[in-house]
Image 1 (cartoon, protein in one colour):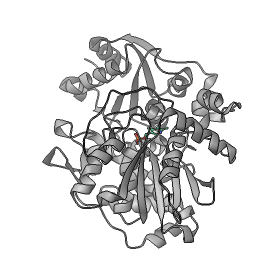
Image 2 (tube, rainbow, N blue to C red):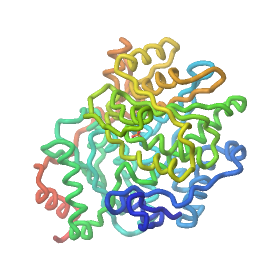
Image 3 (cartoon, rainbow, N blue to C red):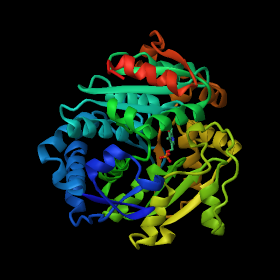
Length: 430
Ligand SMILES: *Cc1c(COP(=O)(O)O)cnc(C)c1O
C-alpha cells in the first residue's frame, strides 16, 4: 500500500511507515494513493466478520503484511462482536461497544497495536501518548501484554473521571501511567517535546499511537461491511448511516467503505452543539467556534482533525458531495432522543442518541436507517441515569476495574522530569 501526505504530496510512504509515523511532514495526514474498488461485495457479505475483515484489509494493505499474519492480527484484534440491533421497523443501531473498553475505539486501537507488534518484530518500541480519557483506555488495553512494546500514557491529574482512570491506570505490566500536574494540553505538549527531541526519540524507540493513525481508519472500514452483512437483503439498497462525530474518523472510514463499493446511499454527519461541519456543509464557510462542553463529551471537538481526509475524497472525485449532509443536535434533543429510545425498549447513551436524533430528522419513506452505538451506556452511567431516571448496572469490565488500585506515578508538567522517568523506567542509559 502506498500513501501520500495531504500537505506535502511528494512525501510517499508505505503502510508500515505511515503506521509508525502517524503524521507526515507539516503535520499532514496520510491518504491512500489508490483506494481499491471491490466487485464481489455480495460474496464478501457472506463471510464472517474476521474472515471478511482480514480479506478486505489484506486487499487494501497488500503484500507488506502476509495473509497469515493479517489473519492472526484481525482475529486477535476483532475478538468481539458488532451486533446490528433493530430499534424500529426501519431503524437499526450498529453496536460497536462490545470490546474490552466498551467503545468503538477498541476496533482501531487493537488493530493498530497488533500491526505495530508484527511490524516491530523483535525490536523494542515505546508508545508515548496523552489522553483526556477514552483513548487512553483503548490504547492501554490494546497493547497490554504485547512483547517488546512499552506503553507510557500521560493524563491530567484529577481531570478525568475515576472510572476512566481505573480503566487504564490499573493494568500494570507493560502499561505505565503518569498523572501530570497540569491539563490535557500540557500532556500533549510533553508528548510533542519527546517526539521533537531526536536523542530521546532514538534512545527509547518512540512510536506514535495517536488517533489520526491511518491503521485505525482502515480497521473501522470493516464494521460497515459487517452492518450490511447483518441487514436483511431486501433492506440493503437504500441505506442511510448516521455517525456521531467528533474528529470525524468514523465518518471517514464509512466513506472509504462506500468508495470501496459498499452500497451506502447517504451519510449524516451528526454532531452535538460543536457544529463546525454541519454549518460548513450548509454555508460553505469553515468557521470553528470555541468548543463547548456537552453530555456527549467525546464529540466536544470544534476543529476535527480528520476532516481533510473527507475533503480529499471529494476533491479526488471518489465520492459526490451530495452523499453527505450534516445535522447538529443540541442538549435538549439529545435527552429527548434518549427518552424516545428508552420508550421503545432501547437504553442508549448521549453519543448514540445524537446520531439517532439526526437520523430521524433526515430519514425519508422507504429508506433504512443505521445509527452507530459508539459507547456502552454504562460508560456514561451518570447522565444516562439522570435522563432516564432508572439505574444502569456496570458491565463486568467496568465493575472489575472499579475495585482495583491505581498504579500511576505523579509528575510535574516538566519535560526534564518526564525524560528522567522514561530513561529510568525503561532501563536505558542516558
Ligand atoms: C471518539 C468518540 C466519538 C467520535 O468519533 P470520531 O471518529 O472522533 O468522530 C463518538 N462517540 C464516542 C463514544 C467516542 O468515544
